Image (tube, rainbow, N blue to C red; front, side, top):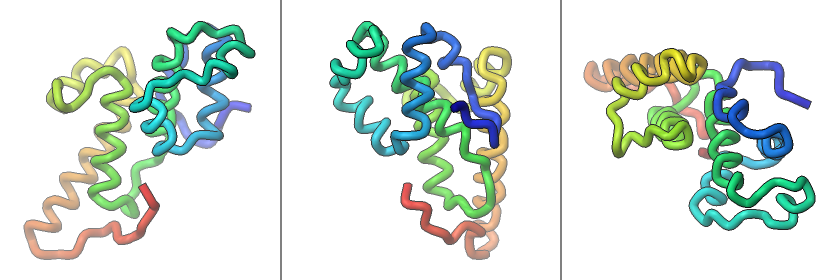
Length: 152
């Protein structure tokens, strides 16, 4: 069953064929961000799952990246996120969208995604605005707003 509470970036999901998209949507609810990143890092396809769903192993990485992008953008930016958590989400989302911040400036990612990934674009704008706000607090000597530990 698709998630309906929040809008999330689906551009990469829509690029997948339906049987591969089914796997990605299932991963949305069963894989944590950490598990998705670990699976991307090891890049060892679950051959049994892919074979059962009749999905070529060449779709493994696109499935993981589509899931990671959707899952990152599913998080609603809020003041409870620590600065490190926001940065983690921004980096993971940009990397999974194909625009790693090691190769692209954030301003370029925002320009590129304006039309092709509008949900990601708006989500990035909200998160970066929150980062700027918290950075201003640090400069004035105030404590950061976000003090919770979400385990990212």
